[in-house]
Length: 388
Ligand code: PMP
Image 1 (cartoon, rainbow, N blue to C red):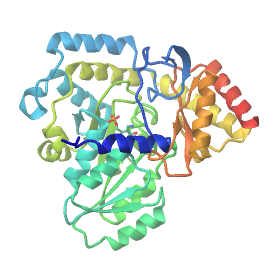
Image 2 (image 1 turned 30 degrees about the vertical axis):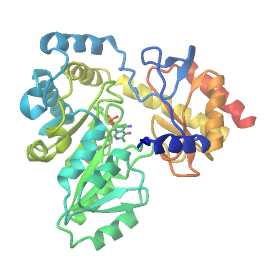
Image 3 (image 1 turned 45 degrees about the vertical axis):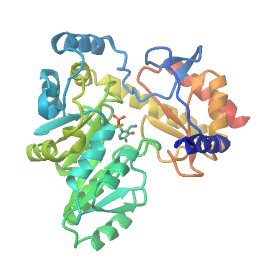
């Protein structure tokens, strides 16, 4: 009998011939500003562990304690018996940290985004989504039976025109990343809140890369722009600045109750392990107690952006710890990434489908664990590559 999966190797070969085939690797050491990679120590500018918490001993200790109290696996979905004391405590602490009525935790940020959009918008509704939103938001719009309209990146005029055309839909949902994951630029949140109010739309934001980094208390860009009360649905992740795993949604009590009843990845997926909840409780405390981590990170990012722009690299509109060096072609992005690798630095080249054709880039992501010497090494290398 012919192999019914014979088409897959052919397709993989096609990807190979286009130099688009992806592979997975093993990281040999813990997280941190440097990694062991294929038996070489490299400076790591590729991690989303922005506050250098992923290998913090306090998170490890909290995870171990949680395991001792509750065991490893949760055994069931949260609505059955999977929601243990640690997860419940984390949701209370998260609502307190985010200054909202309630919070709900998910197995991943991906599941949170995809599930929440599907739960909030149905047939007869319309979703208005920024073209550079994360894949999990895009997948949420695909899951939902609502009509979807994509607006050009941060284009408020275009969005307003769309909203004018959408008055006959039952409900409108505007959805955007607050800090865009590849370009490091920021959504115009006050103006989006104005539009949501003017056109009677729900506003949902994804703070995945901003939680722990922006805002006086580290709550993200809604806090920074003072629009928290005007954004009805806020999604975040534990998997970046908080150094752990999983996603969350914060908002009003009714919103969270609705999600408990209608959000499929919450209802039909096993609850995250207690160990992660324990570690994330510790991470929230560190974000609260150690604001210098985020101020230090943002100061380093500002310094690095200034230096790289001085040398003549194009960084787009980055205003954050995510610094894209925009080079255009896939070939150039991958060549520069390989050259930096040779020079002892891990800076991934980003190409389609993560970015549009012709907008390939090197994605530098900074951690507060990077020292001035680490940054100087990167600037020296990028100066040499710019001149060469
Ligand atoms: N939103 C954004 C903007 C992201 O960049 C990511 C992950 N890269 C996610 C959501 C998904 O989060 P998680 O990794 O926790 O699934």
